[in-house]
Every structure is written in structure tokens, then in C-alpha cells.
Image (cartoon, rainbow over all chains, first blue to last red; front, side, top):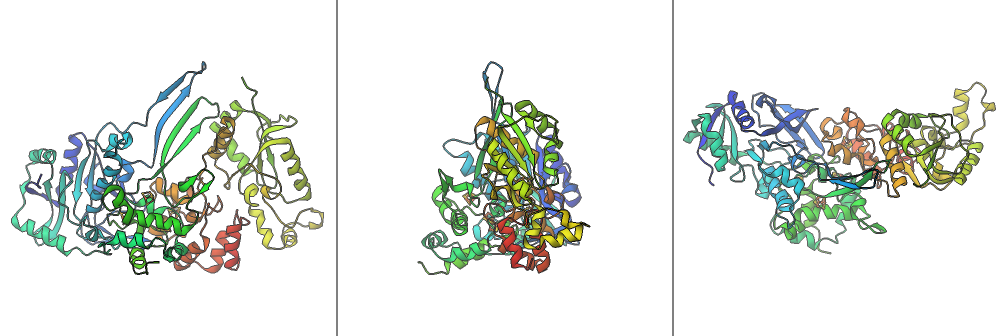
Length: 373
Length: 257
Ligand code: SF4
Ligand code: SF4
Ligand code: SF4
Ligand code: SF4
């Protein structure tokens, strides 16, 4: 559906929206600050959102600064993404116990929280990332029950970015900073001559239904103009030329360039762990000492580990160049073949949270500039 | 029912911290005592049973001729040998002597160093006998010890990752101390196993678990330099409990350590 009529929420009243979701039975999650970084946590009160801060981001560097005002969403995301909640970093797939007579009793996967979740403050890039995860887990021939149990009934409150971070490039990827679909509510924060306020519009029938009883004042035409201007004025920290990118990178897959980037890369896995679309996992089979209980867990894995490509007798991608290539080409090229979309949504996390500041936009551009071998 | 497996725990040059870590994990110890016959474990029990043993856990490094002979006896009496801790897997903090003159250390510490009998180096158990599996850490994580014993009893491969500390750090959702605070961290080159203990306490990783599977120490050191860490401090960071692990030793040498 189209975004319904937008309403005004005074800056001091933002918690009305959080409370409405809580009343409607949702477990509300949102960004908050822990140890000087934005993380995703349970949101009991809008006061716990990161007020008055902005992120200063560069390759391998993240700091929080004061904005000098009361804005809530000037502060973009940290390393954490909603992936943590939809696709948990560690989850039990099954457990089996054996009784004294040798009879086996199987129990299924770890149950999700019984209440459906509401995500409060999903950025354009992360909204697209959830769609990418849907492609992987939900629309697959065999949908993933762990993902589905968490994804079903999800209520999404999107937020438009007024101040993209220094490593953001959602505009290049067509995922932000303004958002037009895929949410239940859309929030825009405005702070101008008309005061500090939020606009909220419904993007689904359920969203409209939950907004109706709140008796909010309708947004004005001037509010809409301010919203549009703010989006147009948002400055991206990075850019990526996506025209023909996948083909250009694949054509250079044997390039010696990968040796250069592997000189700097630590193979530490941070980029893949923070990437909101990276979905790879490993499984661990464990048993207790008494031999009466066995469990299987699924854990986030990464194509940067040697175990990732270990097949009978050895690791296929032994060298750093091969592992960096797997990451870069999967994100920007072969994801298209697999899911008919780009594996990168332009959130910039892998750039900021790479401990040595390796920049996917710079590496892709540099590889593209190399001759085809 | 099959015969219960026998377990022996041996100590070489070490601080006993790894044995104590196993004892400290009370759940782990009770589970262990219920599952195997503890034939030899002086820190835990007075019982001494003559070998052979099914499984020997070995703590400590080799620093004397006597121990170099004794580890061969242990190996000969054991079906499986699993080394536990940085001393046993990399020579430990006492491996600092390997790049120095051990006599200098002896003179600095003991009033009558001539009464000591020691080797010029402290070496990992694996440099003397065949080791079936290594459990890293200073000290070890008792859950990892339990996992290795459990895997042995069940006849399966131990589920112990050789990837970086960062893998656990990110799974836990900890803000990276290096990126968010500028604190130098050895996590990217260190093997996981502690559950990212130090980053969880706002500290950089100290490298207790030794080099990870493909340690890129030079690339990390280059970044530390950007963070303002001096050459001497870079060398020092690589010269701790796993100083004699080849990747860390070579990196320390590159920085004059
Ligand atoms: S590849 Fe990097 S910028 Fe792209 S979605 Fe993943 S973390 Fe974000
Ligand atoms: S980039 Fe690597 S970790 Fe991420 S989805 Fe692709 S293969 Fe998996
Ligand atoms: S690109 Fe950066 S984050 Fe990714 S594995 Fe290499 S060093 Fe780690
Ligand atoms: S704090 Fe250390 S261990 Fe954690 S992600 Fe950063 S570099 Fe890795």
C-alpha cells in the first residue's frame, strides 16, 4: 500500500509510539548506546534511544560525538544489526537425550520469544537487508524455521536518515536514505524553524490500524516539503559505481589485485559478522561427558575462516586472496546470480568495523580499474 | 557396559593455573569425575594408579632434561595425549628465555643459580612427543577441556574453533574496542576460546590463546602503529604467554623484541 497520511508527533511524545507497540503485544527492540557504540537492545522507553549523539565513522574507526541538540536519529547504526534478532548468532537446532534403556528423545530447535517483535528505527539500508535475509531464509525452497519463527509477525518501524554516517553509501545501492516501502510505520525526524518533531506514516494496514487510536495531528504540507528536502540534502560518506559492477569484478577474478588487499586483510571475519546480509553458518555437534545428551547448534560463520571451505582432507580457500575474493565477489557480483539482488545494501558497517579499515567501495573501485587478466 | 576410560593429568613447568581452571569449573570437574576414572591428578586427588592411561592431559612446558625424559614416559603410557594451556602448547611465559640468555634470568632471580639444572629454552610438549590435540589458553577454558574429553569419550572430533577471537566478540555483540575506543587488541590474530573475555571488559585482547589459524600479525602491527603504539610495545604485546609460538615470536622480532 502507499504510505498513508502522515502525522506529527511532538519530540517529547515519541514514547507514545513505543508504548502503543508494547500495548499491542510486541516486544519492542531499538538502538541504544552501550560502551560508546550503538547496539540493538530491548526498548522499554523512547528515552533510551541515542539522543543528542552522532556517529563519526571512517575505515576502522567509530566514535560518538555530541550533536548539541536533542535529535534522536542523528546517530546511525553501530556494528549490531537486526540480523542478530532474526538470525541469532548461536541457536540450538535440536537436542537428543538417551535414557537408561537407550531410548532416544528428540527435542526441536530453541523456541523464539513468544511475543512477536517490533523493530523501532530501521534504516533504509537495514530495511533492504531484511529483504535480503528473507530471500535467503524465507523464500527458499525449504524455509528456515528458526528465521520464520522470529520473522513472522514482525512489525517494522523504519526511520529515514537525516545525517548518513561517514561510511554509508545506501544512495549508491538504491536502499536509502529515504524509504518508500517495506515498513509498517515510517518515521522522519525534523528539527527546523517549526521545531523538533517526528512525522509518522503507515505503510501497512496494520500500521494504519495501530496509528488510528493515537489521535495524532496530521502533518502539514510544509512538513512534507521539509521531509523531502532533508532526504535530498543527505550527504553520503561513500559512493559505489554499480553500473556493470558485477560483470566487471567477475571478469577480474584472477587479478593479482587480490594479493594486495590480502596483505592488509587480517582474515578476522569482522566484515562478514557485521554485514546485515551475510547469512553463513556452521554447525557444532556436541555431546556431554556422560554420553546421554547430544546437541546441535548453529553459529554465525564466515568465508574468512579456514573451516568455512574445509572439505574432506583440506581447505579450498587456503590463502587470504581467495578468501577476500569470495567475500567481495559474493557481496557485489554472485549474489545477483543466487538471489537476483545485490548482496550489499550500502550500510558501510564492514568499512567502519574492519579493524584495519579495509573499504569495500575502495577495493571494488580499485579492482575495477585493474586490467582484465 | 564398556570399561570406563582412565584419565591422567600431568604437570610440567607451569603455574598450575590450567589445572586449577579445570578444578574451578566445578561442574566440569564433577562431570569429569563421573565419566572417567581419574587415575592420576595430584591437584584433585591423592589416588595414583599405575599406567597405562587412556587419556593424558598435560600441563606445562619442558625446561629440564628430567622433564624431557618424563614426557616420553607419559607419552609411552598414554593412548592419547592432549596438551592444555599456553605452557604446554607454546612454551608459556617462561618461553621468554628462548630469545634471551636463560642464565641471566637465573642470576637475576636466584641467589645460588649454580644449584639449578635447566635447559636454555622452554619448549612446547609438541616439540618433544606426538600430541593428539592442543587446548590453548592461559589459562584454559574448562569448558574447552570438557569438550575435548567428551569428544574423546564419544569418539568424535572436538568442536574447538581455530578462528579469531573476533568471531566470538561479534557473536556476543560486543562493541569492538579497537574501532570504537582506539584500544589496541590482539583479537584478530588470536585464536578464539575465551569467549572474548577482555573485549567484554573494555580491554584489548592479550593473546592468551596464541596465534589463530592464519594469523596476519604484520598487518595488525601496521595498524597498531597507526593507533600510536610504539615499536617496543608492539614487540611486548607479542611476547607474553605465547612468546614462543612461531607467528608471535617472528612478529616480536620484527619490532626489535
Ligand atoms: S557489504 Fe558492507 S556495506 Fe554492504 S551491506 Fe554488507 S556490511 Fe554493509
Ligand atoms: S560474503 Fe561470505 S559470509 Fe557473507 S554470505 Fe557470502 S559467503 Fe557467506
Ligand atoms: S576485510 Fe577487514 S574485517 Fe574483513 S576479514 Fe579482512 S581485516 Fe577482517
Ligand atoms: S575488540 Fe578485539 S576481538 Fe573484538 S572484534 Fe575488536 S579486534 Fe576483534
